[in-house]
Image (tube, rainbow, N blue to C red; front, top):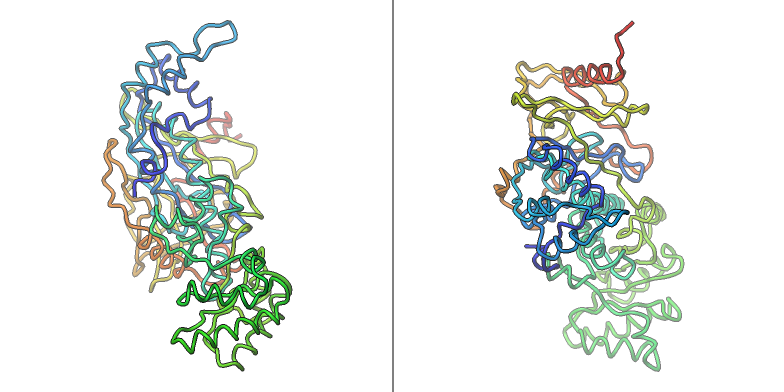
Length: 493
């Protein structure tokens, strides 16, 4: 699916922060634009106070990079920019440079549907410094949001304990782009279908939906409305029963269900959108079973999230399908992931890569330097630990020590003998050419299911999840420490 081609016309190069363009200009002015650099995109804390995060958005990144160019309209706009003294913000020669520029970066990334953790590189960009810099804002925009929503969906689906979860958030989403990206990410995170028809068309996601209260209200009676809907959709009858009185609504649904059965059709079920969902779903289940409809589904909606679904499960609510909207597509309890994009290395004039570190008073904000990758160790299909290491370093032997990037007192020894190993960053672009075979969204969803199954329930619980071990390979930790001391002019005395 060529997302940018289908949703937009023309260049998206100006989908960036202005300071990216001012830095690009300054790089060009200082002769640094073609210096080779490496940037890493990563996050520092799991969203929702959780124990895992589910990566998403790579397909959008691929389309953005394949179409990354400055069009004539973009350059005309930039030519019109002025400084406070009325002079042009950008020299014509710089704009000519942008016009000729062709995307030529290497990109490695974790595949969509991969479970990821703080400080692991999710995307690694290597190439001309100016190009790498210009990719920061759009890549963060894409990865931050879709990863956040995929993670929220995975949490909700986990809480549903095998029941179907439908994403119903289009009307409450943050605009058209937010709605489409959220529907896509929610499907990756485990939702069975979406109400968003355009998302269904663009991404191949199953669509689902029944009728609203307005349908009922447009008739003289609820029973008449149910009969008319059954006549229109005899194969897809899910009746919304709480417009006036839920118990009476279930009775009317049963009556129409019997009429359908006489015609050789079966009512799929009912939906409850208000009130005490545990109480009314249990009453409805008793009524449906007694009337001979034990297979009729009970769909629940009404501002659901993983916490409410967990509570309803504890109350033994008779719900088979969960319709989740606002709190999923808006990531209601945490509106941003907070991933960052940091310079990790730059090649000097002698062709040697120099690792770069950002120093902070907060240890969590000290980035990991160098050209990194990560290995996931597992045994019998269960993840054991993740190790971040310097690419190109020989990892001889089977015994490694990993050190927590924030708390060096947290260390773990890994005996790799007998463990399966997966390198997490996969090649996506080589010198601007896509070399990655893009899976369809159903394969991405399967990858997410496989990834999530690798982790213990303790890592996925909602409250105080168990911390999965992720750390820097010992020599990488030592390198970062040395660089921090050097930047702080610390001589050890």
